[in-house]
Length: 319
Image (cartoon, rainbow, N blue to C red; front, side, top):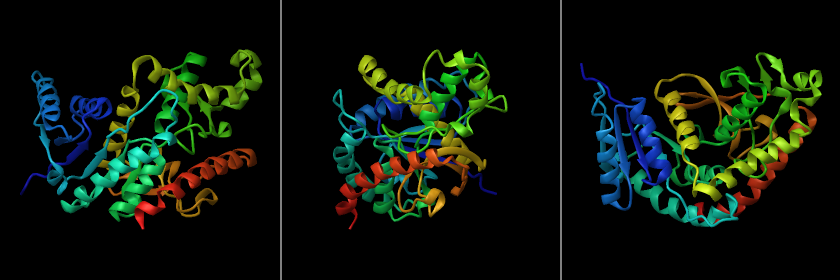
């Protein structure tokens, strides 16, 4: 009987793509890992460095540099290419340049015969995940963006630090755009099975004078602050993408807030945004509909409206 090996192709050998490859290699998430980059010498060098990192491990993992043709039998293709960034730009400001890049890449991937799952990291991730779905023609359940998973990780770390508890004791998700209109459904946040709103009611000084809105703005701003001081963010998003890939390859039925397309859930259609979704070996199995408050639903709708405007800018590319 033939041994079945799973395969992941990562397109983009920048900070995010290579850090993701290191995550996948260190945790041995997949059997075969392909790194694809326009500058093939750069991809070769990164691959050799990654392979050397396995020198003292017991692994049968294969890592190599490749081309779009290698996507033909990949289970997952990860889009980790990045558009040029200038300080002060929002994620949506990067839309046109990033869309140009993906409009060139996706037809070449599909020409290989690829019929797996796309995981999109490239920002602005919600708008570009929609673009990838339209360009590829794959079912929307098999085109997934990292969405608000990183925002949610940042929120969990923030609350764990605030309360001096282990991060695994925090249950919290951010929803909507991975960007400036991201929102937190505070009614759904809990620490150790206790609602965070109740924790604050019992201990009003816990937030040190901050409001929930202040915390949301801090979470939005932290990415820009990181980029200003070190040029890019990559550890956090690579960890998030690795977790999504593991959930898919292992058919875990794990719930994560990813960029996905609702079909009436939350009153939203035909748009990608960060929502809690069940991830399986076939992609998104279903969405989890949280019981949002009226105010939370309004804020989610406002985030969707931001993405609807971005969608209009992309429609000419997919006609």
